[in-house]
Image (cartoon, rainbow, N blue to C red; front, side, top):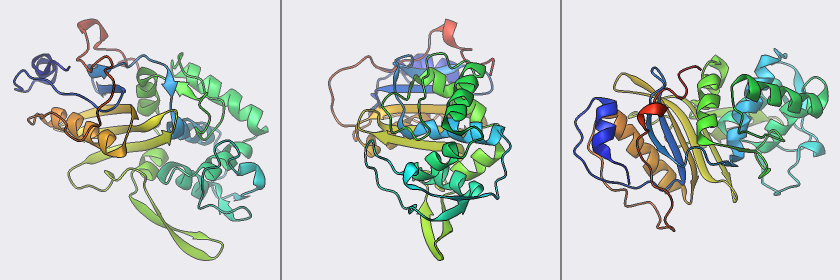
Length: 293
């Protein structure tokens, strides 16, 4: 259970002592300006991260300073043969690299993400090396990324490492812009096609979201990371392995209310599950965990 009286001291707001639960198995809330860890739950467990992987894919592609107007044709190599996931990006269609980046980040399309890695200079092996080097650069020492989409259960990380990833991704204006677009019309083989952001909180007038990415596989559950502004505070939210999207969203709303200093009630929408270690405020020694980023 979260001891809200201690959280209140960290936030500088008045919250009466109480308790509440999170539907996500792993969670982290970090004040980006100070590095203070405001809330954590199983934040150092290594778990699959699904499409959160695409933030790393985007950073590596942008670091290479590739031509965003270069035309790339989707091939059979880009089709998911691991989980046979659906895609609205047909084989044979041609897009600019910039459009593929938008499709990978905003609507989390797997073929778009794979095509970005496939056309990386030096091919997939060079892409994987760039990912490993980027993870080391960011201090993500408990992270393993083997492919660009997140479909592989071997793409794993911790909530703590993902906070570093999100803070770093937030330094890329293009990632901020594309992950916070609520929708777009994109031409696909001559027809305008409507794509939506996979995070329905994007575009909600009650939220100031500066970066967003969702993820889902059977192994990873429902995942969500965000950078948000609330009550004059910039914060990073990491939510991993919720059973349902509604539980993941409820957890994000709970964290948002904490940041705004609003009353927090027990989340009734989170599905019941076997007991796990509960969310708690960070110990004093952990407050500046990501301050170096």
